[in-house]
Amino acid sequence: MRLAFASNDGVFVSQHFGHSRRFVIVDIDEKTYRYSFVEARENDAPCSFGEHDEAKFENSVALISDCKVLFAVKAGNHAKARLQLNGVQVLEKPGFIEELIVEYIKFLKRPLFGELKRRDVIDDHPCFSAKAHNTKGRLHLPVSPACNIRCRFCARAINADENRPGVAAGVLKSEEAVEIVGKALELCPEISVIGIAGPGDTLASGHAIEAFRNVHAAYPDLIKCLSTNGLELPGKAKELWGIGVRTITVTVNAATPEVLHKVVSWVKGGRDLISAQLAGIRECSEIGMAVKVNTVLIPGINGTHIAAIAKAAKEAGAARHNIIPLIPQNEFKGTPPPTCEQIEKSRQEAGQYLEQFRHCKHCRADACGIPGEIDLSKQLYQNRELETFSHG
Image 1 (cartoon, rainbow, N blue to C red):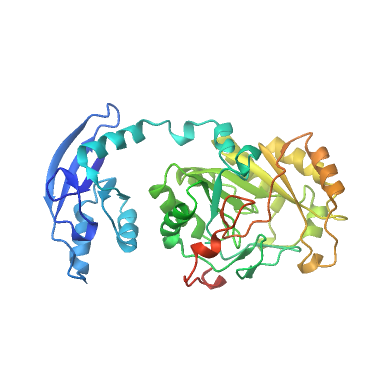
Image 2: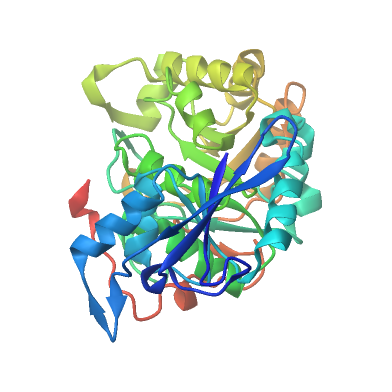
């Protein structure tokens, strides 16, 4: 593995990427973890006195494109995105080069995330674990604008006030995800999970996959979590695993076509949603992901059907079940939400098959912070212009 360090003297990382006139190149043997200094590469800095030279910028990117990591004091968002496209992760850390190398080797020696048991992942996930719910934070990146099914209870919206799924202050561009994660961690260092849960379906467009790829390159140790209706999930497990997704939530509201028709009015291409959901759960579970199933409890529609959903999900490999009370809206605007007794009865019945998660909040698609505590999304996106659903 090859690293680059923005340094004038070959000893200390002291330069911004755009101002650096020299990159020190180091090789690390990933089997022995021994390292060696390769060379110092002279660079014609693209930024000086407030001016930016695009040709010099491209030359600077090309100069270190054989490296996996760049250590620099700072790099702009444009530079980070451009370097990431070349497979170069940017770490903004000043310091002595030798000390940074030793620190990075310790990072390389850590147990790979894929080798961790699913229980370890679950225990650090506030939306999977009661233990983590009030101590760990999560960030939802609202990068997915489109949906491929039409649920009768769903009403997506762009606003900053409602606290429910399908709502966000706007749609974030995938290339802005890394910057937002950095700002969110400053607001809430307890964040352990980066999730994508809307405001549309995460796999109905390619925006979520692009965002996860960028975020995983910049923050490999954070849990990546995806929420989906499951229609496009089959065949995606390997790709999702490759971009760092280790936990996944699939919303399953029916286990038979008869019940599904009462909940969902339209499925893209008339495809078999239930078969796709179960196949996707099975593939994700087999590759090593922790899978949670969400079910919206709709009295009079699927209220007596919850155990059947849990049984089918368990057989497919799901590890958790989260029963969510209906929010009366859209076609179910006049339907009363389930009572506490109805919710508990459903949990008892479904609990024969799957461990029940009992701490869910109706989270926005741009939620930020520790669930149940203050939501920091307004601070995170303050004075930021977000898109509508148009780019889906």
